[in-house]
Length: 382
Figure 1 (cartoon, rainbow, N blue to C red):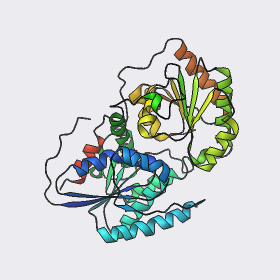
Figure 2: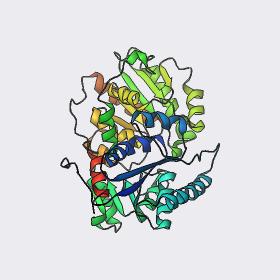
Figure 3: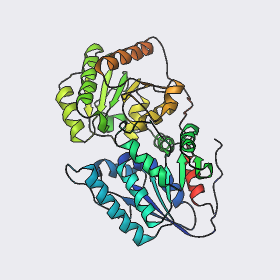
């Protein structure tokens, strides 16, 4: 992909509604919002759903995103169907009231599917950021695979992060004229957050020694709740006993979802060589990954971020809709079985101990840092 030239003007004023639900959506929509706001004659309306508020607000502050609308939809122990119904009703009223030229949302959450449906019902064009990701299995990841298929069915513009994602869309009958390969906006965010390195000892990583090797662990996906999450945690406990603190520090920022938090603390809270942290603000998340020797994760975003940092990733899932990292050798699918995780992590750490170094300037198959600009150009094109 060539770096796009910055657009200087548009023919007529446009109103663009940008929806943000979860923390990853805020990270991946940040460069889109910033680019749109920099263009003359564009009114950008940012709507947040009110989900995961504790995790979302620091991201909004860091990227200087000020929402104009907050739906406040979070409920204790809410069901997917209940959340979907509230989202569609709330977004329908927002779309009716502001009458945007475009509704834009990113990814595969319930919020994104509801935004696509509400826009479709109102006859407003929907643009899908990160379109075309597929595993081919509606149960993995659940319910995200279903959400992104629905969003892509009704989208007018599909911003595919990679050529392979664009090919998936074309194979489903979507006209190539509606597909634009942009790169992934998470790379834009990562490069922005990497510009400044905060003082390690003055923040949430003060319990982690940056001079010693670090393995980062994250897990939060719905399909990993229950026994898979237990096996992930048990594997980390065993690995922490196998590699003492002088060899490896096992650092686990814990998601706030009770299905994750309760299991992680039950199994790992008393393991001496495991450092459990609250969810990190994005700059600290980036710094932690930059210092890591290895990452164990079920996160899609981290699969996309880590290649820019030259850090290998073991993916705690049986399938991935991001095959480019696996094809490049920068990621490997290991699943959630305890023995498999222990074996593959041990192998990777032994390779590292034998002198395998991170790439200095690795190529990231997911983007070059200009995705937000390409998306803004396409939305504002006549």
